[in-house]
Image 1 (cartoon, rainbow, N blue to C red):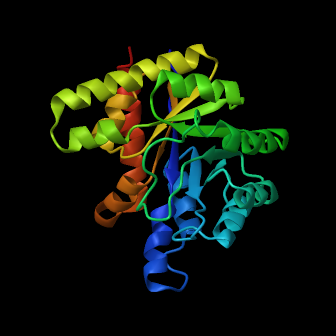
Image 2: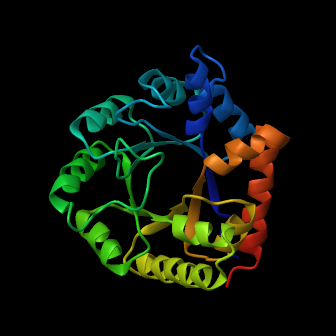
Image 3: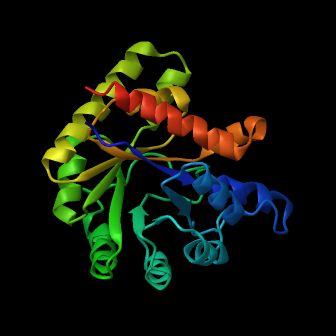
Length: 250
């Protein structure tokens, strides 16, 4: 029997709403606790260079107050590595970061950026932090990730999810096959394969049918859906969608 996929909840955009007004509400740590109670297996938070949503004290409180693993999303910079080493999360996912982007766009350049990424991977791994690289579903990127010594990759699913959202069936089929192939290759290379970006209930159920994907990290859609149904229900519905997909994995 295939294992149940893990569900990580990204609480960045709870902090986005808080920061839009200032003050302390809504509290991303409270959101993390609710998500865990509703069935999340872990919490993801991205501490960006410009602190546009999650702040340093959010990361410290998350590490201190949640009972599930904390996944620290971060750029491969000396500053973020220092903060990660001080925080000691369960995992650190290295992502590309540009000041002008609204959210993380595309995968990390693990080929051209090898010299930049390698020191961060080494320092985090030596400290006992599980390192994940957020990459495109591409064999070259997978082999480069394995060469960097990262035990985990998170496949960028945005192109697939965007194609589904816009009714571009042929493109969606091609992108889904890319993800399916990448998950298989990554597993064959000894990498643990995760997935994230743009996932909703429908695409989550479809992606969970890929047995090699062991973890999903999902944020923006669930925080948006929570406006209508509440965060706990949003998480429960995603948990059910992933379980339904995994039941039909092939």
